[in-house]
Image 1 (cartoon, one colour):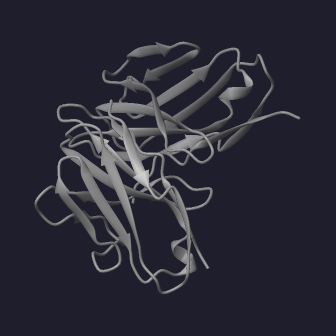
Image 2: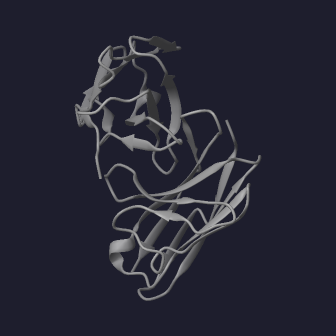
Image 3: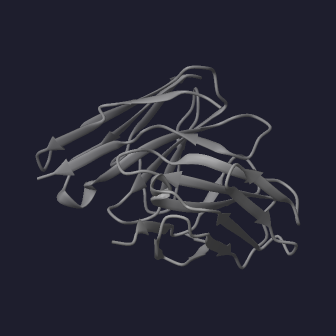
Length: 114
Length: 110
């Protein structure tokens, strides 16, 4: 497995602003993912963060709203842009290890938009 | 997107009871995973299953990969208070991509 940290752990933001969430892994990993977990719900994949190229977004998520960077094999950021109260969720990053099917998750960032 | 059918959605347990939950899908998966999420934390991998029919244990947890590749169950024996949380099943076929169930919330009977 890998040790994954996220910053910030939580934040309260105003409508219309943007927040950038950081994900740091203690070892180089092939795959990094970003998920959203709305209150009381399961996990929904936002995008796969690709090192050196644009992220691959799932249906219903767009780059303008959720820009993602992945400058190297241990770090990624997710920005939640022009926030509204509907963006209040837990945002989770996860990593996948080459040759294996499982993912390992960070502790999450709890975002509240007022 | 697609989601696995996980049941029950929630259940109350008394300390010492055995607990069972399951996950079904309309499509087959090559790998089934079970995660637990505590409040304020990310999901933690409990058990990974790689072969149809496989039965795997991790302490008091036992999980099985259904023979049809379309289902899996998780059993917890002799439950303790720290078993409380949300349990998610997930299926995977390739490229580390996961499809999640809706979760089973385990709570303690008052």
